[in-house]
Image (cartoon, rainbow, N blue to C red; front, top):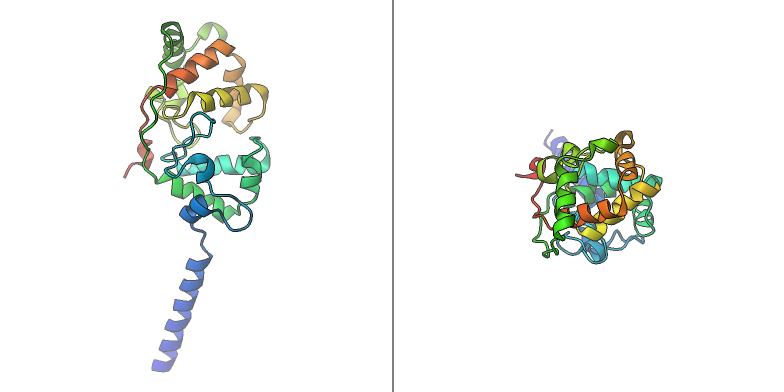
Length: 220
């Protein structure tokens, strides 16, 4: 009986060890790549997950896990196109995407490099678009979906604050041009179609200048 019990315990231990070994390590992938051709995430998104503002690489730290996973899946299936991210997403297994998303969702939001404040005219335009929209053209306020202060709501509406103006502007153009099509009910494609170049520049500069916090659902 004791021999049988020992054998069962040994089998359980080996199973647990195998499961642990086969579970992808999100931190390891972020810092060293996955060993199968995918480069470390930190090469573009920085060691703290804060991104690179000037290059337009976004902050990942503190974003919701489900949102990050959705974006990796969108890069892989082509509903969000990007020459850098598509091969990365396709080079990660489902389990690795989940591990990376989980890892970054738990990182604290790093201090952002202060962004230049928009001009007075741009600030006024951005505040109007952010809080009131432009109903004469059917344009809702940004905060209606992204929450007060655009700090993010749920898994589909990420925080806008704490991202760089370059990244935000790039994404608005991507929505407008159809390079990004992974929004629920085509909401962002519709919104972007109603924005002028001046609108996009103003709102991007405005939100880039606001301080970022971790989304409420990500807070301990």
